[in-house]
Image (tube, rainbow, N blue to C red; front, side, top):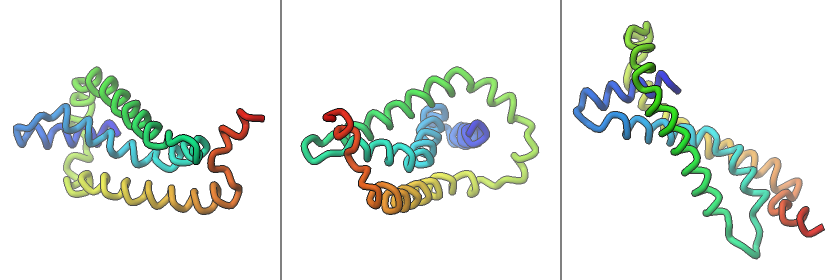
Length: 136
């Protein structure tokens, strides 16, 4: 993720755009969708017909991912820039490969979540089991 952050930072800086914010948002989006299947299953345990906490839990998840990225990359931007300034991958990996990571993570994360939901949550009736365990 650090190298992706570096490449996005350099690209946005070259375009005279706000490099830190846009790079952090890009990394947060990628991390959000890569971890989406795991969080989707965890959130499915909290779903119930009585209360609608799903949207709130996804919002908390997104804010936590953003806060983690903000704290990490604001503190480490200079060290990441120094570390990857002379990387051999700067010449071999094209920009379109870096840009395609976000759509691939969106499609892959959602597809993997749907597969897990249909093969784990539905067959084992795990939706909303957290509140069932509390009531017992």
